[in-house]
Image (cartoon, rainbow, N blue to C red; front, side):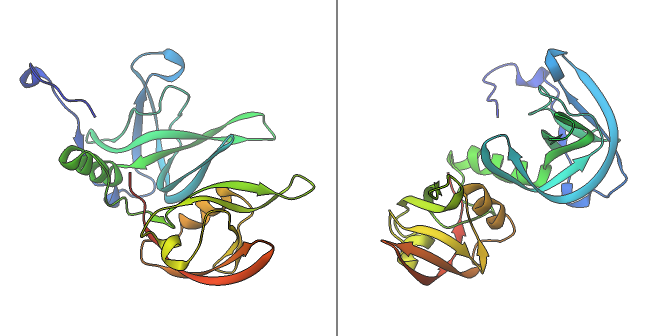
Length: 227
């Protein structure tokens, strides 16, 4: 977001459309500065909506409800605009898929944050300076990936819990290790993030927790991710 103190009347701002209305097959344009080439526009179609995608490359971040497009997205496109043929912004290009076999970007597979998410988050930041309702589920923890003796991911180690948050209410404490959530193994923070992306605040699920070598199961009611 940019706050303009003077001269705003001479600026022409883009209009946001409703990403909820986007349909697969629509023609879209990705605008940005890929590889430092200012003002580049690429075209394609909306390939899919509602994708859950991990950023990868060592990051545990996960995009939810992402718009998939065949419009070329390269480094420098992030933070640009994905617009429809009416010129309305329906998403913010963020990520290009990579192929381990090809050793680089996978052509024609890019992802954008949906405009409905952007306008919701931006509106909260403008109004209060923080995000109080992200729409994303959170257990209210900071954590790191725990490895076993062979160096393989073996669980999510709890560094701290948010007072009054979901984990705290369930009795989870710093030092605990979450090894399973809702019946599914969670060997890493990235795996936990991917699982949470499929849930919403208020969902209840069992968590299997290891504490000092002893395991127990607690019921966690997910809260909302805030910042």
